[in-house]
Image: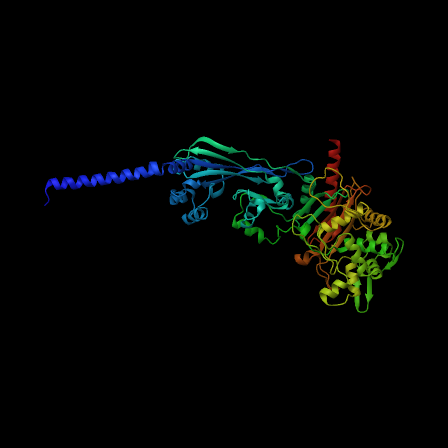
Length: 589
């Protein structure tokens, strides 16, 4: 055994070595790297707070707000404290899976702003988390702006909704300065005018203590409010028309004939945009996309359907402009046209008797238009239809539109590899067969007929100054006057098919349409209720009012609704009357 003196010397040497090592380490930390750690200590005490920019408000044409801004609360991790945060305790506290929290932290390990863990918190949840900040100093409450849509599905297909930035959008230069967790316009007007509405977010930098309490404000960049937007939509008209649909599927588009402003745009069924404003969950998303009524489909612009007898206006205009008929030319319509073994029947089996052009539109005589189409030929009808911009998108750019289809002999040869047949001209002449249109296309035609043939660009923005038409449709004023007078008779005459649109407060001119989805056999007679829903006829009605100096033109489409005069005309009447009352009220005020 060594003597005590040797042991003392060894212990003393060890202590000296330890003190030297400790001194060297302190020298490194305090002198060599002192400035670095001082800076790091300061950074760890900083809290960066995102200040959302209030988004511009969207108003209707009368100044009624269609949206409201609402706070969106999230719980996030301060990036400076992520490395030492107890993720297991945090996950348990927030009711999240540890793997989920760990994955978020891993994906944002180089973040410089708070990393969101959970969004859409209720206020009581925010208060609960704030009360535990001393236990979880790495947790912060992040506040963003989202939307509340007070009118729900009434204006959803116009206004649209907000959503989080997607992976592809993050890479676009348009969103380079937008915080990744922000809500931006993802559909409708919210998307079309996102940069106008969005504003610019601000930022506050605080110094905080070890338990996350704010000590002082270091710097602040103020948020910039987004710009407001005034739409051309009339909210009262929109609401009245939605109610008039009474749960049926379809669409309505109303235009101001002298400006091209969209006064109403309705697609039913619709959806509640509030589902998206806080981040839609999987269950609600699946319910929407799997809904048999297709509520996300904008039927006003994305419906390709036969226009039925509303298209007779095009055939009539063609016959008058080609001078194969005059307004006084009469035909005997006995209910059927026979061509070889084929029979082309009128909706009225007994026929309409002696018919001139006005009566043919008022009573919607099919036989008259079979013969008119035979005289003009399909190519002339197609040329007229294209003058009114059928077969092309409307230019509204709200959603990806359907273009419809205006067939002619060249199209048939190119697509079907077959010649054009006379029977196909008969069908096209009454808006059946290959002819397909959208509600917004029919609304445009009606507007341009009503205003004397002046074509205006469609817009969802309220016009501050009267715009100039971009085109004068190449149709004579005399022809359009004949058509408008016949449309007046459709509603006003005793035998008019649109009598259900007759109003006591304004003179309405219109045209009914009933588009067959499938032709029934001649020997088959079933009531409307006995026909399967997806085989029922579509109901159409186009109209404008007043007859002189029209203020509104519209198209109503009721999917599988039946007769246009019975189903679609009453909806048009409600919409037109509401708009005329709104106009009167606005003038008085």
